[in-house]
Amino acid sequence: MANIHADQPPAYSPGAALMDLSIFLSVMVLIRLVHVPGLDYMGNVLVNSGTTLVVATLLMYRRGETWASLGLCRPESFKKLAVITLVALGLAIAFVMAYKIFLSEYIVTAAGEEAGVKDTRFSDMAGNLTVFLSIVSLVWIESAFEELLDRGYLLTRLERIFSKIPLSLVIAVVGQAAIFGFRHMPSHGVDGAITTGLIGLGFGIVYVASGRNLWALIIAHCYLNSMSMVERFIDSY
Image 1 (cartoon, helix red, strand yellow):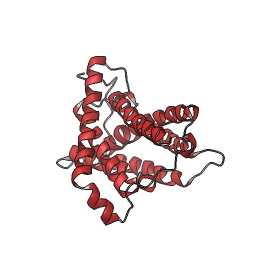
Image 2 (cartoon, one colour):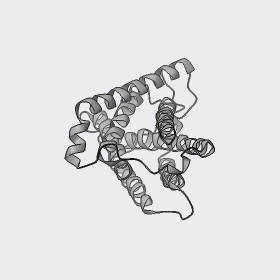
Image 3 (cartoon, rainbow, N blue to C red):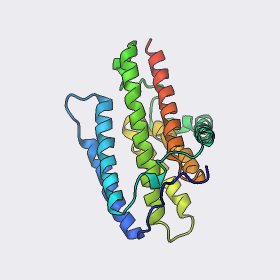
Image 4 (cartoon, one colour):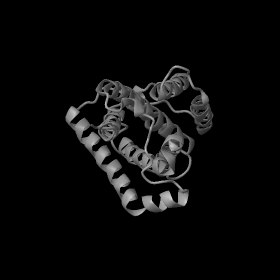
């Protein structure tokens, strides 16, 4: 998959990118304070991410960008798409496994967290296949939103901001992973935030190495989150 872009993003200054990123991150943080009555956990998560996605789209529009320029267009080869998806999954899982084997126990202890605390965010799907399937469908939508926001928008803005200094791409990949993990801390704890950040790191590396392939990362993200939901559903019995 040599190039999946429908077009190339236009050039704009690091200062302009910094201004856009400041607006984007402010919305991403502040919208989390909004809770829509009558919506469950996933409903509010989608409202938060959807609102941030709208803001990101508007900021892109004013710069003459499209999501296609960031990698959201039809892949040239579905075989290569599958390979990139598998590579993304393999790298993310490898990072997480290495962390779990060598550091997780120490991080949990240092953070004062209790290992094996039960996650009650999806307790309403316990033993209910219909609810489980509805939640999984919402999780897929959120997975796609996160790839657009974190790998697509956030990483490219960070890269533009640091474009005048060496290793700007490395800073962008690591930076988006750190932010991706940090914003999951309220619901996942320190240990879970680090795990999430490592997944974001693996996905970020594959994103830039594959020619900015968002579809492969969306599929990989959906798969990981689906497996997590299946594990929760099985444990609920």
